[in-house]
Image 1 (spheres, helix red, strand yellow):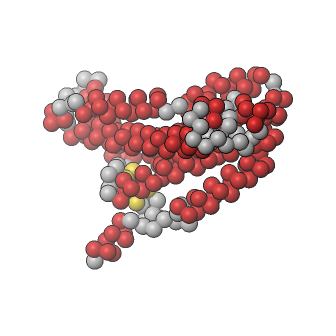
Image 2: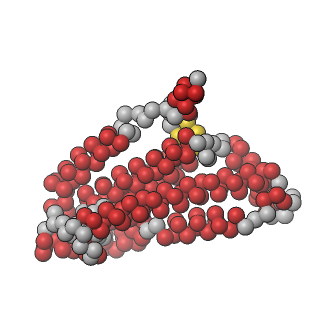
Image 3: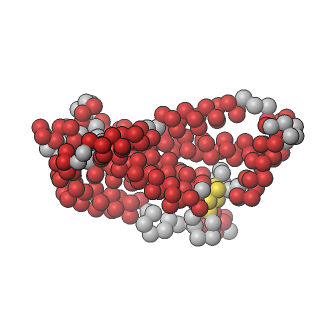
Length: 258
């Protein structure tokens, strides 16, 4: 009975979500990108008007992790200092849910960021600015030089991790989130900071970390559960969260006591 209960709470990974499937996709897409896309990208970028680079430079820094970590981390720390016993039930529910999901986003972005930094420094791929000197596929392992930290793209990893977390939290907006994340990740190519294969690898890494952490939490019913199809969804439903958020808003605006 215990084994059956565990099997129900921990559904098997679907095809395409298993580690070996993700690794196969990574090897295929990154390999094809290295051969087909990386070599012509640098000359193509140099042929474009400078306005293209400037336009994408305006959004590329959204892929930095510091603003995500600061906002979610500070919220988690500040709410821990509250006297939760004095809060109304629905206010506690709203603050608790936001705390859980903020911690989830923080963990996903921080974990993927740590992994990508390790890979960058170990692999030591030359950035596109060194294209004319060493070419597009030069690696200097363990070089620990900033000019040799192209693979994978850190910005792409961060924005993909964030997008995956948000898509799980807000499934009805997943396509809007995915498209927005695509253009931010693509901007790393347009500003000349990374090759296409760097961006693809970073995107797959960020997505994988987000899914793995969400499933780990769902197995323990920490903010997430599995639905009938085996997908991960937030534990708090939309109706409950709206009611709790409304109660919290009324308390914050003085309409009712906390």
